[in-house]
Image (cartoon, rainbow, N blue to C red; front, side, top):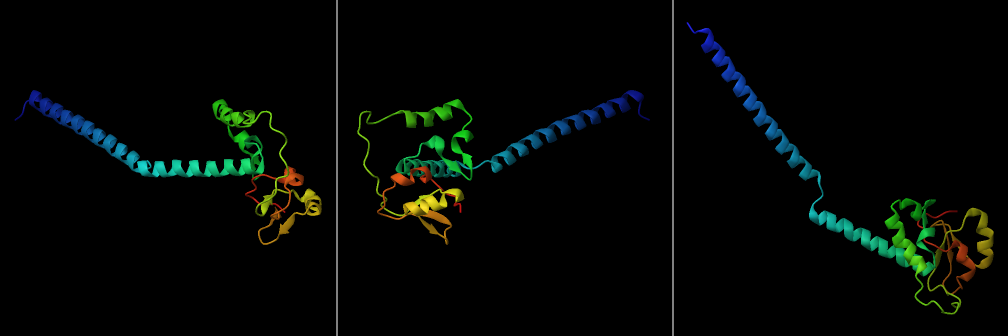
Length: 168
């Protein structure tokens, strides 16, 4: 028959094997969690594509704002101002420099800006009669106001801007 010390030694060996097995399983679990996190992360090419999309979209929006003569601080989309979306001071500073720098400080006032193509307007419903009187046209199929090509854009200045969500 086994002695008390032998039984206790066997129990201690079993406890030691259980502890080692638990450590091994925990290490394996940590490795699997790390692999899972890598799978959820976008690939380098996906991140590059996303950055390229953002750059191109931003360049387009800035060009349209410049074409319409609208400052980035005044840009709105569905009633939300872009400038209010920028919460970090250094992000705001990037767009503040766009309006403060003047490439031709002593240039005379520009002449009339003639619309080369139909130009979309952001006309509130309350101003529709005024816009119509100035020559703007309502396009019911697209649900937006436009200045026809060939008209001077100066009288439409209050409604010029990037309007991606048409308003009636």
